[in-house]
Amino acid sequence: MIEKMRKTTRLWSPTDIVIDPKTGALSEPLDGFEQAVECLARGGLMAIPTETVYGLAADATNSTAVAGIFSAKNRPSFNPLISHLPNLEAAQHYGQFNDDALRLAEAFWPGPLTIVVPKQPHSSIADLVSAGLDTIALRVPDAPLMRALSYTLDRPLAAPSANRSGRVSPTSASHVIEELDGRIDVIADLGSCSVGVESSVVFCASEQAVTLLRPGGLSSEAIEDCLGKVLLRAGSDDETPSSPGMLTSHYAPSCPVRLNAVTVNEGEALLAFGPDLPDGSEQASSILNLSVSGNDLEAAQNLFAGLRQLDSNGTSLIAVAPIPDDGLGEAINDRLRRAAAGR
Ligand code: TXA
Ligand code: MG
Image (cartoon, rainbow, N blue to C red; front, side, top):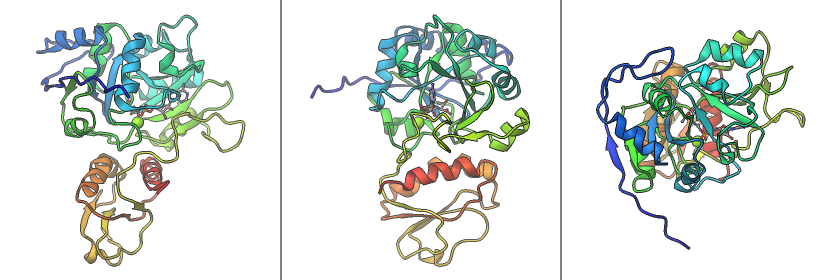
């Protein structure tokens, strides 16, 4: 086996990033910005925070750089990546937006929603980004640095979550260091992510229906209200599109996870939700409450850091209290089911 080339990973902590909210262009000078643009232009790999999770970004039109993302993460190459753009107009250079796609983009971008649309013919995005599919996943994140870098580079930034494949997504720079130190060029540190779970992914490449491929940081209720129709669910029958990336076991801590725990056994760690704790909680080796008040937004924000923390305490099992499925609860429960699967 060939040893993976070890890189020196540089930590960059920019402050006071000011952009034009409409275009995403940087509107005030920023220390280190030019160097960061040059790094990406040369095909470098940079961890950049978004409102959802930290992404591992590279120039989406540079196939060598994109291959570097797959290799740094040990990601299977059949799993396509999201391309991040500074604004909707830029996104339309790469994807064909139907009425539903346009309506969603106008309502929710910049924000935690990824829209899968047919690729524009002659798109310069590397084939590896879409894993050979004729559709492309596009997102304008609510992330000033990502938008400004993409705007100045004048290229989409391909970025999966900045973790090794199959592991919990990073929501702070220290998580990225744990995952990818020595494998990438730069980690931009802007603190913790405000949403905390990955974007919702919708498939808008058919005229009739919109399919939810992955529940995420934007609630299904909000998407359905905007569209005025019900979302199909991926894999609900043979006709509905599905997403190559939705492997059943994913987002996994290293210890087993037990869901919907209404009792806790001695020595188990408890991931709690809301004011009422399950029976036996006093026997837990440690307790982390995602949201004492039972707020889904707060719980999403704390989810991945919470799993990491309980996992690092060396516990034998993480028991997860029941979490209602509404709002961001759908995405939280999706990630927790994957964390619990296959063990
Ligand atoms: O919040 C997020 O979405 C983060 C940040 C960094 O933007 N990114 C992220 O990327 O979660 P990743 O690679 O972990 O997840 C991308 C998802 C995968 O489930 C992948 O299969 C799906 O999007 N996807 C990408 N392109 C697709 C396509 N053409 N058709 C269907 N699914 C696609
Ligand atoms: Mg991921």
